Length: 206
Image (cartoon, rainbow, N blue to C red):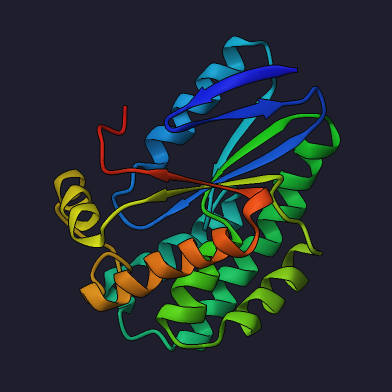
């Protein structure tokens, strides 16, 4: 068994396929941590598939462009949730499952918990409704480990603003929305502590 050091903890990696997801609010450093973990695993000789949500396949990336485009700011919340679910269904079927079946390690930037946080709680569509929709879309495919990068939304949004001059639809939401999103991630981690690792993301992402 190999051991990969992560900021704030360790992840034990077995020789079989493994599905690891990074979750967290805007500016938490997910992309950086995905890269650091994948680089460590590749250095150990493992096959690593790095992906993201929404996205990961051409179809899912096209949906990503649609749902994050600021021009679609008034998109109906139900339509938004269904578009995310459609992207996730394609992503799970076309990329994630095949990679896991051949023994690869899949490292993903966002997954079901983001929909639960942003649409279920943030959009007030209902946590259980979004969980059920995502379970159906993925045929109950859950991560082996979800790493939540926890950050105060005020700090996270400031970081995100330093990276991009043009905030996307989610980054443009009110602070109260982002506070609800943060709480949703923490609640999910508390409810399934055996499958989650919460890391304080206030420090240097590197």
